[in-house]
Image 1 (cartoon, protein in one colour):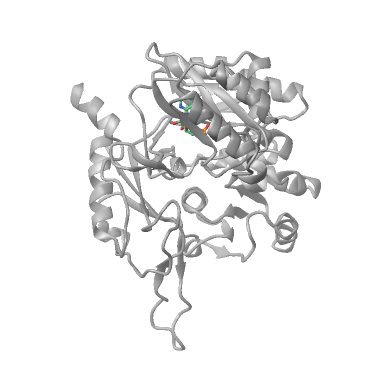
Image 2 (cartoon, protein in one colour):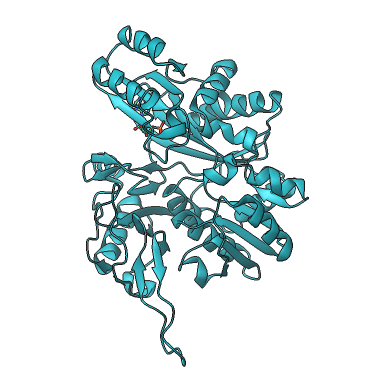
Length: 438
Ligand code: AMP
């Protein structure tokens, strides 16, 4: 089997790792990949959003199945273009990916399907947006409707702050096209939870839910980032909660998408707020694996689970149990570059010891790294590994419990060095606190 993984971050390295674990004989290609995926297969120098070039590569290399990591190529129609030439692909069509690419559309779908979510309204014009904000309770949330790489949602303590945010997005072009439409919504309280489900558009298999840490600083302080770490499983999750999420959120959404002629096949990721009374509400939908959630969730899925991706892509999926459980606990700590998220420093040499020297059950997934070309022949060593992006490495450790996995992940992070290394030592703190209280 020949598999192409599209993308070049830690999530895609984790996908390659899981595919190779489950299918040791598979030939892997990654576009564009990174030095981590290069150890598992062949990196193709094609951008993740270069739809035509990717379709050509799938034909040239006779790829059997393509797994799409990031949202941008899905929103750009990569899955449609591949299906149009008869190629199997794991990831939704552009019409289905609108669940992530347009928050206004997602809100409309949820309203129609009676899915619990924050009360909201969507606006393309500033004046009615400001009028709505003036009548709204504080705090409130203003979101760019389009894809904004995690920078689109602004929690505003005051109506004045919300008005300024709406003005910046709608009138001043901050966030560009992504902010031409905005969603203004009610602020929800509770605990956030990421529930990812595999689906062929009808059946669902819920993966072990995870919690991620969006803020840069320890104690969940500082600016929002793409994610500084994640862990799973999460002990606040009960079978009853997952049943509720399946019946009240995932299945009605899939049905509504199918009714609209936009059947959703791939990973449906529900970012939830679990209210103090235990009821889940949707904060957002994503149309793909989360990053860094994938780096925590994929390693603890039962071996063989990537066959589900292959079967969904081929349109021959037989859903397993509705909930897949984690075999171990996992904690993923992101090592970011100095200056992340605004202006990450690049080009810095990384000293990355072999995984075996980093402690038991440690996996290092590359995200923003690059390797210098090997020295002139005869090449005796590999080229130097350098930082090349904001999130540099994702260090996953497994353990019997989340606290054990967290200790192992942090210990491994201590042993990896590069100038300006920026990371949180408190990933999974909520779970560790819960474990201590238990
Ligand atoms: P989103 O891009 O919609 O996932 O939002 C990013 C982050 O903003 C979420 O992970 C939450 O921490 C926060 N957020 C978004 N919407 C709300 C809301 N309605 N109430 C409270 N927090 C929110």
